[in-house]
Length: 155
Length: 117
Image (cartoon, rainbow over all chains, first blue to last red):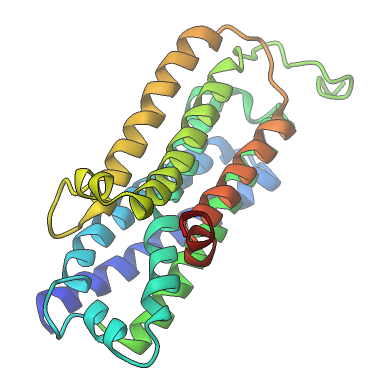
């Protein structure tokens, strides 16, 4: 396995940490338990960190994806029978993935600044849950597009 | 009695204006990245300006400047709004959802080509 392949694998693995953080936090936001606020803060902290690392590792891997050589995935896709896989799908993926940290930073602010109120304030918990769902949906879209593009032209 | 039953805030509630500021910051970051993409597709000079890192290309500038814009708006909005007692939670969620959908549209190549061509 070369470095770009390793980086691509790490990039995909970080997404599982985001998912793990989501499951812990979301369950507590919907039906809070005694240990709830701490779990919510841990989960959101893990998700926010994972989102930032996903964008960072993604930008790093992007260097190899778009390298100006005939063997790079972008060059292969643009020269092949399906250039739209890069021009539409990958262009979409590379941009919408960068939105996820913005959503998570709002959730991070909410659960840490208003953490002491989450037990009693259901509307705030529902907003936090909604933010985590938005982050998850946009992460899934990014991930799905990435999986498809990788199938067409692996890094 | 549930303090939320009559739409009242709990006794230990902090002002919620900071949440509004955070949402405004996030919306700014998302829409800026999308807007930068459209302008870059229309203008090669701007596209080159966004190449903060040659390997990453214009995406480097879109992300960096987009998040800087978001942080600036968050800081300004926080200064102005942090004492606001309560905000409309549902409205904030839909504002962010709308920004995400618009941001996605702004980077969808067929839509961008319609605008630019």
